[in-house]
Length: 301
Ligand SMILES: [Mg+2]
Image (cartoon, rainbow, N blue to C red; front, side, top):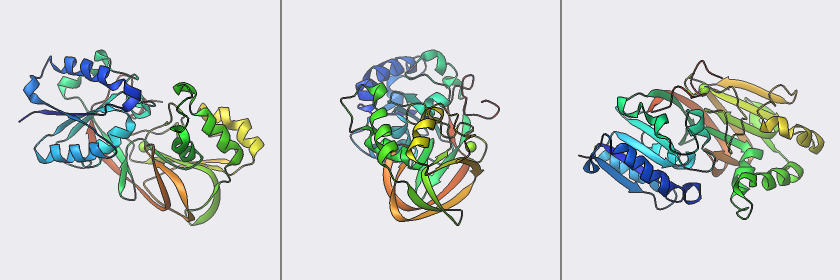
């Protein structure tokens, strides 16, 4: 029986995954024989979920994802809460916010993985929105709109690609009416973080800790265009939380509703929802992390 299941997404990070895969397999060869590794390649949306479920049924208990935070989300859907599982994420996506929060660089560096063979790991919390688990962040409103439109701007260089949808929606997005904690609110955005940031370092929940048993909530009132523009750069730097129209709290369960379907992202994947049952499964996924540099585990910030 192969000991390790590697699930990799060949189109993550606009094609850099193949290089990362080669280097990671080289790294694994220190400890594993080729026949001890099962390599699975994703072929489309949600395929990582199917592959992980099948591998689990076949007896695999150690899983490595080579891809972005989105592939990791798909791979882990059938693994949360199952016994004797360990997962790892080798970052090769575009944002890699979760991987970076867990102490890794944007790509594979063997030094960050030197404790991998010692079975070092941490039990991380997992968020849940309706039927879907999330490991990093989810959001309703502005940030979800930006995530949904990001891929349209393919001709813009990657590091600038978030800016066109950001400016378009700063000017033209009307906000959403949401019932939050039984109170109607008009929101500009609402972000829920198991991790601190998404979208390549935009820290909407900058105080989130992935092992504290709580989810961080940040929501911003639907302020006018001048205030949106004035405070954009504070928000991009994670320094928005002291503004008077920004609200923060922590929770373990929360129900939200709206009379209209609202653009929602769950770990970057887009959904149109009007009811959100959000909860936390504490310490429910054992994960290899680079403890020395992880900013998402307790005690750091
Ligand atoms: Mg937390």
